[in-house]
Image (cartoon, rainbow, N blue to C red; front, side, top):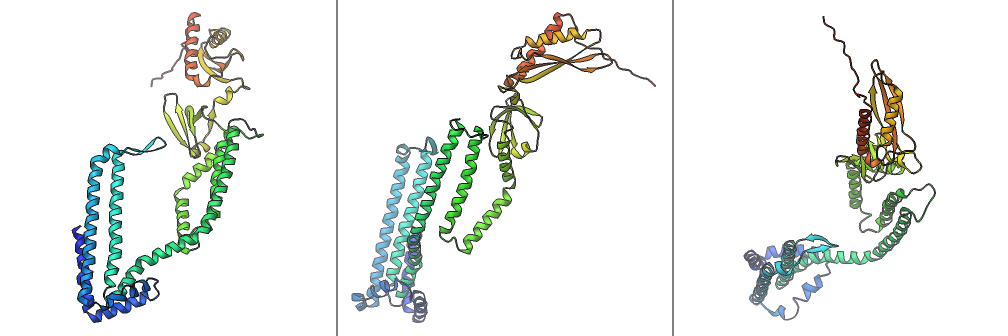
Amino acid sequence: MRKLLVVIGLIIPLMFSAAQESDIAEHVTEAADAVASASWIQPLLAEDLITGPLEELDFIHRLGIAFAIIAGQALLIWLIWFLFKRLNKRLESAGKEKIKPFFIHKFRLLTAKQVVKVIEVFLRLLKYLITAVQLFLTIPIVFSLFTATKNLASVLFGYILNPVRDIAFGAVGFIPNLFKIIIIVIIMRYILKGIKFFANQIEMGKLKIPHFYTEWAAPTYRILQVLLWAFTFALVYPYLPGSDSRAFQGVSVFIGIIFSIGSTSAIGNLVAGLVITYMRPFKIGDRVKINELTGFIVEKNLMVVRLKTHKNEYVTFPNLVILNSSTVNYNTSSDEDEEGLIIFAEVTFGYSTPWQTVHDILISAALSTEHVQKRPKPFVLQTKLDDFYACYQINCYTKDVEKIPKIYTLLYENIQSRFAEAGLDMTSAHYRVITKN
C-alpha cells in the first residue's frame, strides 16, 4: 500500500515539471499529437475536459483540483484495500468451517483448504484489478487538466482502450463464424451418437453383421471417433480467428512436427494395437503364453496388453512387442466346438516293465483326475527308447484352462499313487562311464 501511494505521489511532480518545462512539453505534445491524431478518444478528452469553466482557471487552481482528485483516489484505494484485508481475515477464520470441498461427479477436486486458497487468490486479483482501473481513470483525467499534458491523457487512454476496442470489434465480427463452428460441432456430435448407438447394439449382440465380431465394435467406434473429430477440426479451422495468419500456421506446423517426432513409438504401438484388435489372437480372460510368460489377459487397449500370471504378477507388453512375437492362446482349444486343450506328463520305465502295464496305469490315473474329460479318452505316446529305459507320455483333454496348474498337480499325484499301488518303482537306472588316464 505504501508503494502504491508513493507511485501516486510521483504523479504530482511529473505534472508540475511537465507544465513548467515548455521545451519538453512541446516535444511531448508533438509526440502525443502524432499518436493520438487518429484516436477516437481525442475528442472525448482534449476538448470535453478542457472546455467550459476549466479554461478560466489558472495553473494553481488546476493543481489544487489535481491534488484533490489524487487525494480522493488514494483514500478510496486505501479503503478498498482495507476492506479486502478484513474480508481475507474473515475468510481465514470462518471459511474453514463454512466452506466444503469441491466435488465433480463424486470426485473430490479440491479440499476445503484449497478452496479457501483459490478464493484468496481471486480476491487478491480482484483487488489489483480495481486498483488498476482507478489508476487508469485517474491519471489521464489529471493529465487533461493541464495544457502541456492534455494530449498525454488521450495517448494513455488510447494505449488501453484501442486494443480493447479492436478486441471487442473482432469478437463481434467473429460471431457469424462462431455460429458456423457451433453448427458443425453439433452435427458431428449427433453423428457420433448415432455411430455409438449402433456400436453398443453390436457389442451387446442385439445387432449382428456378417463377419463382424462383437469385440470389434468398441475399437471401431474409437477409430471412427478420432477420424470424425479430425475431419471436424479440418472444417472448423478456416473459421478460427487468425487462422490465415502466417504466425498461426507456423505454430500449427511446429506442433505437428513436434508431435510426429516425439510420438513415433506411441503411433507404432497404436497401429499395432489396431492390427492386434482385428487379428483377434486373444480376448480378455484368455490364458496365453507371450515371450515364455504364461498368464491371463486382464487388459487390452490400443497401446499395451497386460498379463496376469498364475503368481498374481502383472506384466505389461507394448503392442509392438506382441505383434513381433509368437502368441499361444490356450483358450481357443476349449471352445464349444473343440475337443479341449491337451495336457501331458512324461514318465520313464526300464524295459523289464511291460509297456502295456505302463499304458493302462497312466490312462487310469488320467481318468481319475478331476477336470480331465472322459471323452475324448486319454491316450499314451511312447516318445523315446533310450539305452536303459523307455519314455511314456500321457495325454488327456480338459476345457478348464484357468485351472491348468491344479490339474497338473492332481495328475502327477494320481500317477504316483497308481504306480505305487502296482508296486512299480518310477525311478530309472542311469549309468555313467568314467575313464581314468
